[in-house]
Image 1 (cartoon, rainbow, N blue to C red):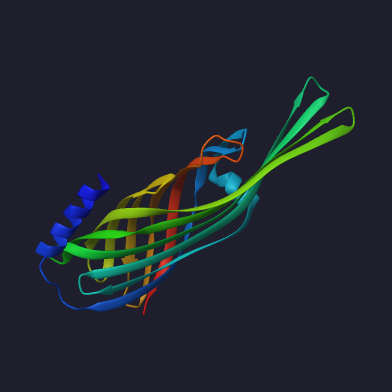
Image 2 (image 1 turned 90 degrees about the horizontal axis):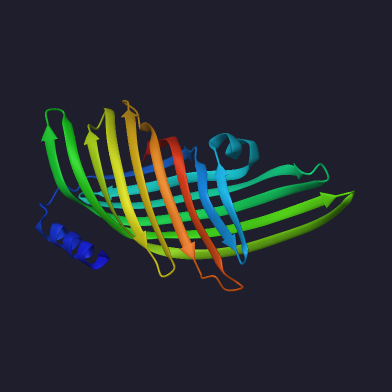
Length: 254
């Protein structure tokens, strides 16, 4: 399927009309106010992950997110970096004597790079509609630690599992943008990624506003799914995680 999609991309690139060689570079920062839901497995330890945004805020340790996009005529080049570190815990009691505390810690870096070409552009009164096709890569570094400590009658027994993996997906994406150079606009992004032991998909719907200056402000919704599995042997590791929530930020045009 990816091969067929790549052939379609090439056919679009060869048939697309040449556009004006205008250049611009946007440097932006943003916050992805995500909730995380899914499953994580380290060797024989499995856990269900269900962290709402309020849990993320409460257990947030560190994070930063930013991107850069350079446009030259019909071509676009995008780099995006998102880093997140958090820890969450819960506890419960059984039979009044046994108390179990469960901890999960995430440290994650997602680095994306894309090259794209505008295959369609049309003006509607004062607005412009553009469609870009992209090919790129999404590299993920994820460290997960699952730990538990059971206490009974004043005695405790800790147990933990920790694993760090990294993987890369080849990604194909399409972006639709509608708006004008100044004022309100909107954009929609959809991509699918595939790797040897992994897969991913992403969707974004954003509204933006650019005044008379160089700043643009944007906000909307983002969904990202990451899957990775090395098998069920003694050293196996697997995650299937959904990141969903609002996203907002600002970008400066250089």
